[in-house]
Image (cartoon, rainbow, N blue to C red):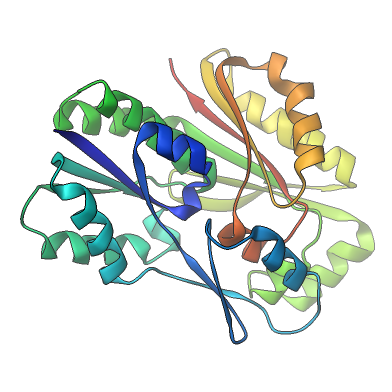
Length: 279
C-alpha cells in the first residue's frame, strides 16, 4: 500500500516511464471534425497528417468526471492516498473535473494539485513525485516536495509556424500573416500558471538559439532535470538535446514528443526546453 500518482496526458510522459513509475494517466481527447483522437493512445501520426491539411481546426476536450473516477477507482484498492497532478488551472478546466471526480470517491483521500505548468513541466514534477512514492514516502512528504518543485519548473518553446495557433484561435489571421511575411518566430514561456510570449525573433535558427539562452538564464548554476520536447520534430529535438545538454548541470535528461493535445495548438515542428531546478 502506497501513495498512487495520477496525471493527465498533457504531461507528455512516455508510456514506458509511466509503467516503470506506476503513473496512471487520464487522456485528453482531440475532436477533429467527426473524428476523435485519444491523446497518447491513438497514433500521433494520424493527427499530424490531418493537421497538414487545410480546413477545420481541431479542438481539445477535457476528460469527463467518469474518466477520472475510473482512474481513481482502479488504484484506490492499493493506495493509502492518491495525488492527482494536472495541467495548469489558469488555462484549462481539466483540474476542476478532476476535483469533481475526487469528491465522488470516498474510499481513499485524493489530493488534486495544480502543477501550474504543462507538457514535461508537469511531467517532470509527476515523475519526481512518483519516484518518491515508490520509495514509500508519506503523502505529506510528497505534497511538500511537489509544492517546492512547482516554482522552479520552466518551459520555453519555439514555434515555427503560427498557422495552427491561428486555426485554434490563439492568434489572429493578421498577426499570423505579418509574422509569416517577416519571418518572425515567437518563443513562448510556460510556468507558474502563465503562458506568454517571451520574445520574438526573425528566423528559425535564431529562435532556437534564443530559446536556449532564455532556458539557461532561468536554470542558472542549479542542477536540473532537463527535457527537450517537440511536436513531430524528433530529429531536430534530438540534435538540440545533444547540442545543449552539456550547457546545463543535468541530473537527468529526457526527449519526447509533446503529444497530440499540445500539437493541436502549437502545430507540428515546435521544439521546447524544460528545466526543473533541483537546488
